[in-house]
Length: 382
Image 1 (spheres, helix red, strand yellow):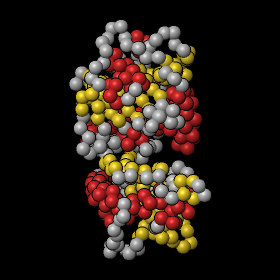
Image 2: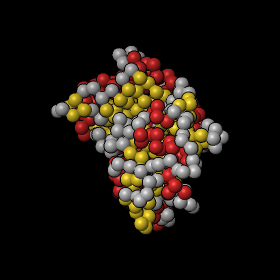
Image 3: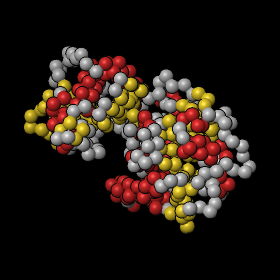
Image 4: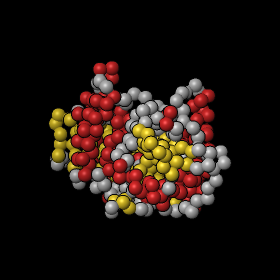
């Protein structure tokens, strides 16, 4: 195409080529494996154009409200049953700012395509082809590049996050490191399950919901075949749950052939919010690996059989991010330190920690390194 564009948002030009390469690689691999319903790769000029316009639109307001919008690069013929505008609209800041209040609901995407000379908006859609380039305006100055998973449900796979002049590009190879927790590798698209009742897919939805309430919190995921976790919790428990609450667990045990995906998603959202709301209570919420709720508001303490945690591996799945040895207290307050101590004592457990400022960290045990590892994954949850 002959489309030419020169952005005024420097980060758009900086990251456009890298994003094009990401989509070229994944779409080529999917095509080679015989996958169908694949999206068209946007070239670097298109990516730069869309990011530039979206960034400046994110700083605008309509009747006092900030701009939140999701743009998707596809033709109407790939959108299932799209909502088509009678006349196409130019892709510019003014149009996006005016249009945003009507399309800001989750799951609604504004369709963008080109005529060889310029990009335009043709309507909206709730259906996307595989690996479709999506650009979310999440808040002023914050953009997220993502795509629909080829397999797996729920959360899209994030490719890059742009915040002001900062650019973070997701490094998928971080999920290939030894002892990477399943929730990380799934978010990176390395081992996503197509099953609607997969426990890792559900745990991802719990993490997203937990981060969304913006009050911070700790969720401890413990083995269901023992109660060793009790050695690392102060007793008596302030809010024990007995018998263990199985709202989420009962859903994932259901026979998928007997319920519709729409029913399951609606029911899951209610049950997930039922649990994640409790993580806002001071203390830790405890569930087992069957996703049964056992307690909330629990106070973590060092096990009498253990030693104080004095270092751990800290990493973030972004290009240029290098795992570093740090003291747990250096990455946050009491919440992070106590989560690291719990995993240090209870090697078979996970600790998910949400901060009020939006950071989200998974603590797990590395059998190879014989220490706690902390993966900061908020870039994957946006």
